[in-house]
Structure formats: C-alpha cells, structure tokens
Image (tube, rainbow, N blue to C red; front, top):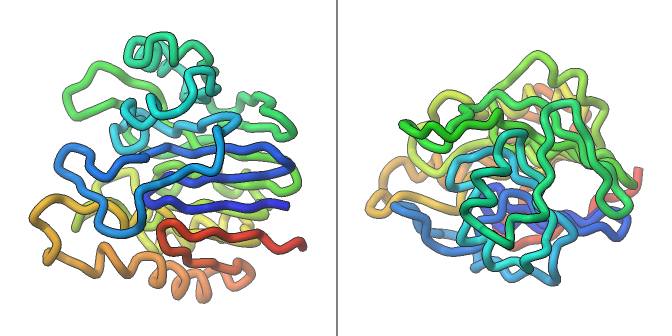
Length: 253
C-alpha cells in the first residue's frame, strides 16, 4: 500500500512498503514574511524513517522544522549540502546522506534515487552556499516521483513511467520566478514522465503577510487548474487534488 498526506507547500508524508518518508518539511506556521493561510499545523503520526530535502531554499530546507524531528532521523540532501546542514543542526545533522542526480540509497524497504531538477542552486540570492537541486524517485510497491521544485527539463521523459507524481504547480506568492512549474507546465511534466497518478503540491498554503487580496487565484486555483490542463495534455494521468492535511491511498493498478 502507498499512502500519502499532503501537509501543504512541499511537505508530504509518504508511506510505501512500511517505510515512512517526509519531503521538504515545513512544520511551522510562519517562515520570515510567509504565514500559513490554509490547512492545520502539521502533526506527524510517527517519526519518519528519512527526510528527503530537494534543495537549499529556506522554504524547503527549514532548520527549525528539522529540529522538531528526532536527532537520529536520516536526512537525504543534495550533494554538497551536508556541511551546511551539519553546521546548522550539530548532532542532529550527523545522519546526513548526500545524493547527486543518478545516485541512490536504500531506506527500509524502498530505494531512493536522486533525479535532476531545474531550479536555482543557492541558499539565497546572495548566498555562497550552493548545491544542485534534485528531485527524488522512490521505488517500493510504487514508483513515486517527488519533483521538489523545478522547471521543465528534457530528461523528464527518462523518469517514466511513474505510478505517482508529487508535482509542484505554483508557489508562495503572486508571481513565479525561474525554475518553477505552473499548472500548465506541470501538466506537461506529468505527460513526459508517463505518470499514472498525480498530486499537485507547492501552492495554496503559505502567502506573504499583507498580500491576502493580491492574486488570490494564484493561491487557491493552481491545483484545480492543473487538473484541467492535465485532462487535456496528459489524459492517461489521473489527478487527485488534496487540501492541506488531507490523505490519499493510491489505488492498486
């Protein structure tokens, strides 16, 4: 059985073959100028077997959230990120596995492989801390692609077929910069990856303070817009649009 809970933004609790994974954990309700505007504060059912971190941006690699997890939690991070993580977490950062695209590791009953992503590699605009962004392919009872944060790239076709895609379809503000998917390009991504089921993520959770009335369509609508585009572009892909905090069990094929 493969089951997931979307906790908003890019935070997904994924269970496959008894192995529990947590992606890009953002477990608090405020991050700098962003506040959680939809969905409950995440409450995890147990300690994860591993955390998958896709890239260095603070809304994906949030040290305050990682400190809420047991100190011996395995962290899987992009190649080059471990020194930053260990400096920030100290003892809690000891169990840190770096993966570059094409490399893999075994966690419980699943294999986790890092796959390419097209997204800025720096921690911030002026930061010297860099590590190439990745996505992850989790292989157990299903092949699950956690895309992290990415724009379209040619090698997406090499990922498929995948049974489940956790696909970003928006962001945390009224505009999207380079290295992101919107509902239309996300539909093209799942088409390229020959996806069976797709769950849209990375939208509709956090929004800048004071911007509630600015482009609310960019906050509420990306999931449904993605489903509409996917029906046209990738008709073989079934889409499940979740609310933050909602769970989904992937039907057996």
